[in-house]
Length: 460
Image 1: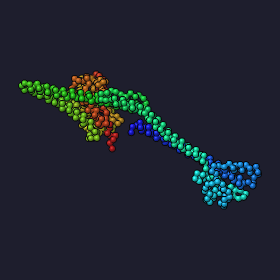
Image 2: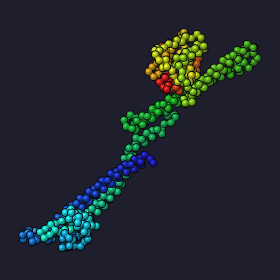
Image 3: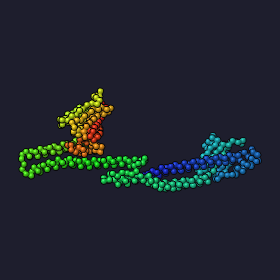
Image 4: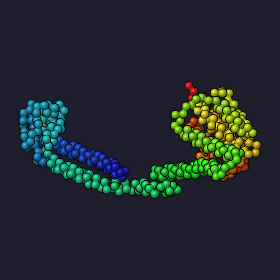
C-alpha cells in the first residue's frame, strides 16, 4: 500500500471516529433531554388530574374552575388511572397499558413518585394523600412529536456522517498528495542519480523538517559513495600501475636476454634483476594479503592480551633489522603507575605489522638521517603511540587519500614503496576498535597517532 493511500485512510479513520462520537453524543443527549422534559410534563399532568378529581370538594368555585381548565388541556395519547391505596380503580381515562401491577403500586407508595417507560409510553406515578384517603395517580402519554423529531435527527446525523466521509476522503486524498510532494520530489531527484552522476545532490536539504533531514542524510550518503568510488578508482589505477611495473621490467629484461646468446655474467645480472622484481611482487602481494586479512570480521581474529610497549619495541627491532642505518627513538611520555594499563587485546602479528609499517614510513620519508621518534602515551581509557619524523611531509590535498591502498603522494614518487602501509595499518587498527590519524605539513614532517583501547579496563 502506498504511503499516500495509507495517509488518506488514516486521516479518514480518525475523522470518521470523531464524527461518529460527535453524532452519538448529540443523539444521546438530545434523547435524554426529550425524555426528562416529557416526564416533567406528565408529572405536572398527574398533579393536575389529582387536584381536579380529588380536591373538588375542598376548594372554592374559582379554583375548581381553574383546575377544570387545566384538566382539559390533555397530552397526546393520554391515559390516566386513579387508584386507591389498596389497588381499587377509582378513575380511568384513555387507552393504554400502564403496567399498574401491585409491585409498581407498592413502589410508588414507598418512593412517593416513580417514572418508567411502558413501550413507547412514558408513565409517571405519584402517591397522593387526601382527606378521603390515600390514592395513587398514574399518568402516561406518548411524545409522538418529539420522537418524530428525534427520528429525523437520526436520519440527518447518518446522512451527514456519510456525506462528511465523502468530503473527508476527498480532502484526505488532496492533503496526502500535498504532504507527499516533498518526498515525491526526493524520489524524482534520487532516480536521476547514477554511478556517472554521483556529484548530483538533492535540492531540498536546507530546511528543518523531516524530509529535509532525509534529503540531507541522503546527500551525506552520496558524499560517502562518491568518496568510496573515487577511492576504488584510485585503488584500481594505482594497483594496476604497481603490479604492472615490475612485471613489465621482468618481461623486458628476459626478452632482451633471450634475443641472442649472452655471457654468464650478463645472465646472472638479468636473473638477479628478475629476482629483485619478483621479491618486489611478493612483498606487494603479501601486503594485499595482509589488507584482506585485516578486512575480515573481527570475531574471527584470534586475540590475546599484549603489552603495548613490548609490541612497539618488537616493531622497532624489526625495522632496524631491515634498515640498520636508521635511528628510531622510543620513549614514554607518561609511564603509568599501574603497568596493567599498557595492556591491549589483539592479534600480535597484525598489530606488529601496523606499528612496523608506521615506523618504517617515518624512517623512509626522513631522508636526512632517517630519524624517527615514537612516544608511548597512556590516556584515561586508551594507550597511544605518537610517531613523528622531520621528513618531506604530505600536502593537505594528499592527506585525504593516505588511507587509500596504493595511493602515493606526488612528492614521494621517487621513493620506493607501494602505498599500502598506512591503509593496512588503518584496517588493522579498526579491526581492534582503535584509530589512526595523520597530521603533516610540507617540508616540516609528519605526525601519526595510533590509539588502542586499554584491555585492562575489561579484564575480569
